[in-house]
Length: 156
Image 1 (spheres, rainbow, N blue to C red):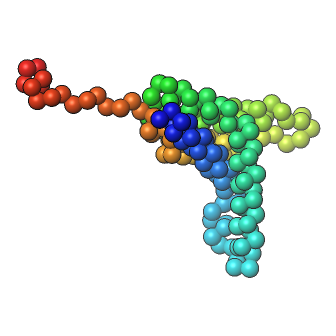
Image 2 (cartoon, helix red, strand yellow):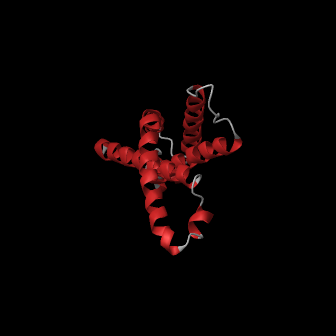
Image 3 (cartoon, rainbow, N blue to C red):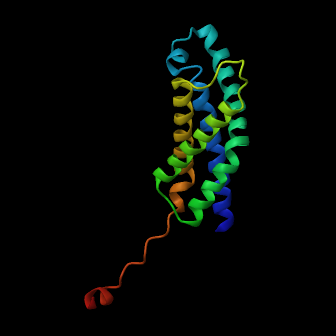
């Protein structure tokens, strides 16, 4: 059972990183833009979106993977099955990523401190946390207590 949970956690983290990568890319190539592309450009652009998603997911995994694993382990140990825990954890990790990006900026270049970038990071954290919860987190909750037998219920 522990092995199955460990595989589920790793699988959930991998899908959360893919979802995070796709979310970030969709802030560059908006869905409205992708839908209105002419047919001759659409295949190339969708291919580019796929490649950028994989690249962004890799970067998300490198930064957020250890923090996501820590949040997942806490959720597993504490038997937390609430979607709010995982989405808040995802948002917190995204905020750390946003701040790390800002702290590593060159003073002579444009800053990441703007509303669009902040919303992109917050949305990405929410989506990644929610995807993790859908795949793995919701099954981390403690099992329900066994039902009372009819004799024990009558005497209570």
